[in-house]
Amino acid sequence: MKNHLLSQYAKKLAICGAVLTIGAWLTGCSENAGFITQCKLQGGNTALCECAWDKMSEKYSTQYLVAVGKGNVIPPDRFTQEMRNAFIQCHRSK
Image 1 (cartoon, one colour):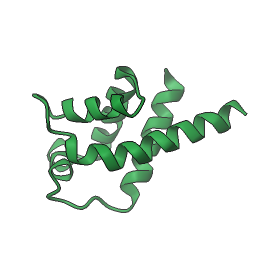
Image 2 (cartoon, one colour; image 1 turned 90 degrees about the horizontal axis):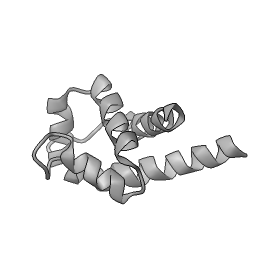
Image 3 (tube, helix red, strand yellow; image 1 turned 135 degrees about the vertical axis):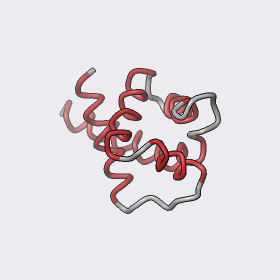
């Protein structure tokens, strides 16, 4: 039951977060400030949100993530799933 709830929480956070944060990643001083802010507004804590950013940065360059955040690049179909997986991994490790 706990894993099921974790999966539902992570899925909801990742999907909502992906939709709402892509356009807001760059509103702060650093590349990830907007992402962290929007992620926290969706229910994540700072550690979880920073971890998810780090995981996504392992797969995509900061330049690419910046382009996605600005809407200059349409992310691949797998992007939302990768973000979901990042949140799940980060949630489990905390």
